[in-house]
Length: 268
Length: 258
Image (tube, rainbow over all chains, first blue to last red; front, side):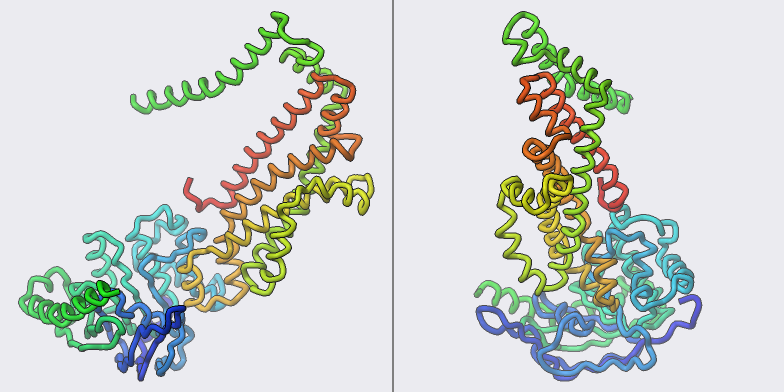
């Protein structure tokens, strides 16, 4: 990242996306018709009740699963790396040092070790892991592992970053710190980020727009704009009246779906 | 203070750990010296130590040890290396699994020593037959563990590798292989113990040298103390190799939390 100007994020267009899982007991519709445009360099958050298919949506976008119908086009002309994903569990390989883990996405793309080193160094410095380069993941705390996963994603300079509840497993303080760090990194790199969370606060802290998904099968119920300017100070933001109003508004949209999700769960 | 107490406790536990075997040996010695049991059939520990020394000095025991170790190590390697390779291949390619799976199911439960006559027919009475029977014994636990290790890698590691565009070779060499290593080592440990069992037993039936032969020929000559020397030597070799093995494992899998 340090060696070349970071490129801005790509535009994503999703049209008529559907996902049906075939199970022995019949087909289950996980996602029913999603149409969505995500702007270049946008931080786009998706909230929704458990089991609404938001993770499935992200896995399809990241190319880890195939959609049943519909198209996804990512305007990432000239990018060597289209997307990088950060998972809820860091997914750092336990058998690689922090350094090797961060460089993994460059290694798979055939970047030479000499060219890799300064980029890995810069990415580790970005997330404060430089002194831990030779550590194995089991020697790090949960928050540090997640920092490693973020560095591994950013180092490839992707057109789009997909993040699936990356901080959900962390304690509250660590989560806030990592949210602050992520928004700083994003403010300087302006990658397109699609970020899944179940926390309204987190979506408001980080997002430019927030999509609320319906209960199963998942659709986009409503998209809200987040008016907070950048650079953001998350803690200061959280005590503004606008924050509270938006939080309540999103909760009302979400509440109905959470109740529906619970009702269908009880019925099953 | 508390560190010292903890260290003291560990020392005490170690002493207690040695107390029961040593106590047993002392009781044994005293019982024989008191005239319990026929010394020709049940030697005293002191007799065994004496015979151990004599066999060492004559060069018989060192030579037998070298011969047995060579057969066991060679057989272990000849069996384990293809076991690892084929087990990983089973996890990588469905077709390999479909071909190999029924063979494992059919051949694994056969006592490998039951194959000894066949192996003698095929390879003759030389060193090859012993190496082959040990190799067959070592092969199965390794292939089963290598396959299980590679097939049960946590899905997230596969997802991450795919997301970062890993080629099949990188997927294999940097992800599947390392992910399977802890279970491969578990398989190798079992295979090493089995190699010892089969190696010595094969020497009972089909050898004119080695620790197994020493035990068996002593039985035929009714030299019970020499029999015990052979048994104890095998036990010691087992302890030494498994200790070495743990060290190797620690070097090869440094990421495995102790």
